[in-house]
Length: 396
Ligand SMILES: Cc1cc2nc3c(=O)[nH]c(=O)nc-3n(C[C@H](O)[C@H](O)[C@H](O)COP(=O)(O)OP(=O)(O)OC[C@H]3O[C@@H](n4cnc5c(N)ncnc54)[C@H](O)[C@@H]3O)c2cc1C
Image (tube, rainbow, N blue to C red):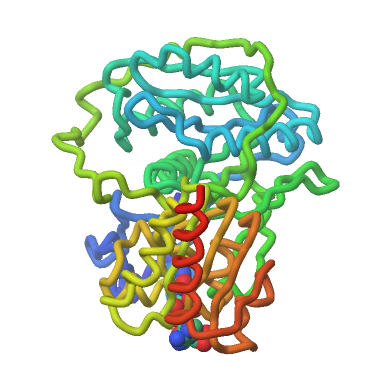
């Protein structure tokens, strides 16, 4: 909460000038904030008479023990659970066991049918289910209302969201409403010796990995990139399925889905779901040359992806970008063609099972993560592989 000491305020207006959200005004020559204030603190820093302070909600550490359970938001789209929720149940199990607390899945939707059982089979001890027509499709307002209210009543210790488009929208919205800390886009999670959640994520353009704690607020919240963790393999069990009695006020939902447009070409494989992915880097030189690498993807029935420059130049769609600001992927086979292997690219693909790199520079960093390194001109190497694949297929 922002507090303005009106006795100290001189009405200099510096806070009004620096406020990035246009939330500060002078009323009767005294500073006044409005509902647009995000508590960013820009005004606090510039106030020459220290008249502005921010009171952040903190939980008394002695009350931390009242917060129990590792929660995973199980996102569903059109009745299909997204894989990242199952991946988070895999990691969540490990965290919950370390803490000796239950692992819970939170499922919102309509006609959710078998989904709670799938979550139980993937290790959830408790599944909270809110099944309402208004929750059939994701909306920020409705999902924030239900999950925020549930957090306030059940007091979980940790809440994890997949860093999908919706998860990246929902997690921060709930954190802002409940005034909680949140670490976005984590690539690692663990528990320290004080039972705190260690949230690891790339920082400074991916050049360092930062370990972040939320020491003042509970629950601890994080969004986690898809394909970072593996879904559990042997978790089958029965869960306690609890219906959530929180009704959404329809008038409070300010958006409605009018249409869904799928950006991908029909039949195209998604880089973050395919078992094999072939990517082009700037080494392909022109957009017409994408076809050279595309043929290899077609022969393997692999998804076709690209490095960021390829996407930035408009040669491929954003959903095809692999890396820190694109998709994090972990296919069984990853083939990089003319990709140098910048750290921002590597963080998005280095957990692939088998990596083949084709590059004409023997010192290219991509070779440091490759299982098979082919030093050569991709315009000779890739067609040769395609030819060999066709020969082998023809023999079969
Ligand atoms: C905040 C931030 C986020 C970023 N996010 C991403 C991201 O999500 N994904 C991403 O990819 N990048 C990302 N980047 C950009 C990243 O730093 C690199 O610039 C980018 O990955 C380089 O792409 P590239 O490997 O295609 O191109 P280059 O670095 O130019 O490499 C081209 C490679 O092709 C090789 N080559 C050239 N000709 C041939 C040939 N005929 N045969 C074989 N090899 C050949 C060259 O030796 C070279 O190694 C990000 C950068 C920042 C700052």
